[in-house]
Length: 263
Image (cartoon, rainbow, N blue to C red):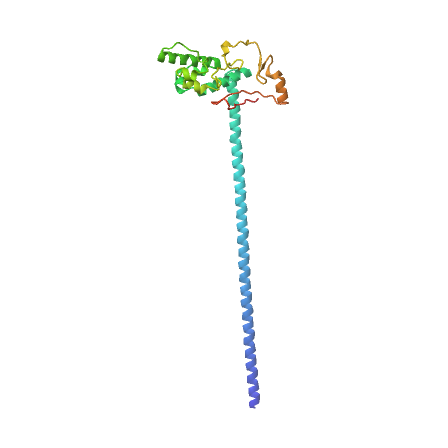
């Protein structure tokens, strides 16, 4: 009888331990499943954050590209306005001064170069006349008269022609070579102090004393007489298909080169 009771107790105890083991296994599996779900949720959230960050970066990149295109378009628009404005201004200026030939336009540019280099004192003195002078010969003659008048009032010396300064005039006649003339050297004179003729472009005399008749044509391309630049052989050789016109404007130093007008 006792044996039967003991066997039954032992069987019940085994069943209880088996139930506890099964319950512990279920809890362990549930914990593993729960942890796995949490990890999956965290990974999904991380992937969503990465995708959102990438989307924001793409939006920012597109915005930057749009802003850059807009900036370039605005810059191109402003440059186009400047180009058009410059062209219109140049055309109006040429038409306003009635420069209907290259020679007239060349004289106007040379005259403008001389006007830019004169002192403020001379600009104030010729305030009403300077804008009306479009010939380099007339302008230089005005400057010559003004310089002679100042020299005469200071030293009472006889009048000397501004253009005909001698080779040693830097040493012998300091009153004759003024700062104004030194500033204009390179446009109106060469390094030796010889005046430039605005008619034949040679040095040693001025236009009103030039021996070449006004009717003789001068080619600015080959520096020869007897034909115009449009018929110049040298021009056809150097410029096969391009028709260009150049104006040589020397700066403060005679070695400096110049500006070119292309049409």
